[in-house]
Image (tube, rainbow over all chains, first blue to last red; front, side):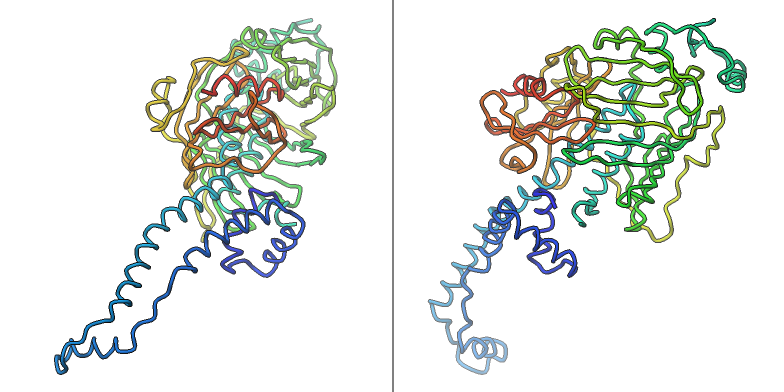
Length: 158
Length: 340
């Protein structure tokens, strides 16, 4: 399995969405390939960013406070200031981190599809050459198109 | 004794008679111009259907691919791949408006743009300006008389030999050699039938019931000038009107696939094509693929595809790629010409 192909599989691998067979292939390739392990680590780091965000616990008296507002039967109680600050801080961190996460994932995806896009577009342009071999260009274009549509290449399935 | 016919002047009746006559006569060797012109005219004068075997070297591995190939004037194509296992069953039907690709193992239909390009109508003289052309002799291919012609690009790069059917001008066999003379690509018919009316039904495609259909049109509207492409890109790009080795700007477009947006410029020397891609480096890192190849002191990487190669590099805020059949050193020169 090639490096740029693997990056496309990594997301599904991390999310546990691959079949057992595909997952095993990814695992075996990672065991052999330092560059792909690096990419996996980078992607894991990006994804773990959100997981590391603080998860503030709701105050124990939250439900009481809500109910008091709802039924208006009890005197109004205020949330502890620290809880409010924690929730606000978490929201700010999420808002700041999201663009970075998205950019990183987009870059990985772009690198993954880039070569296939270039091969396909050039092969299509080459179809105008007078002595081009139609069958071979058809093979190149259909290989690249299949990859872009998410079909794993033969070497990736091995 | 007669020279290779100029097909633009041959009527359908004469062609039919020639097809029936087959190899009845053995004319003197035609000139290189006559062979080239017959090759250039062939797509407009004859249909065919046959079995083709291709062998291509990718890195250190050779692959053999068998395909049923049918062609109908002008530009309609049907390819049914028989082997190897990875592509067996794949069907590509180009009806002249779109190229439909069916992947049976995934029950998937991909709608590609038609492979038929707007006619650039090169002449034999255009080809001879870019390549040294020589007629090597005559050989039989699957029982048909063929003229053997070799094209050596003046700018370097792989040379190609063609076995050209004397009756139709269709290439029956192709052989490509790299700079060291090693054969890196072969393609030949093991069976072929010519005609003037291959059934049109072969070139119509109906998606199988329940198949998932993915339209895959990556290129936007074509731009006919470097300035228009630079304006359309929306990010800084270098689009010269010409490149080294006589390549001139032919068309441009903006290519989009998910997060990847690239300005794509296509150049031609009249016979061959070079494509230059440029994308913002912030959104497209250099993929960790291929072998190292320096580009003007920068680190580039070259990916061998078989029929051509792709050189990728980064300069400033741009990630760029150039694809073509030029040798590595020539690709690097082209790369420097589009590096700001």
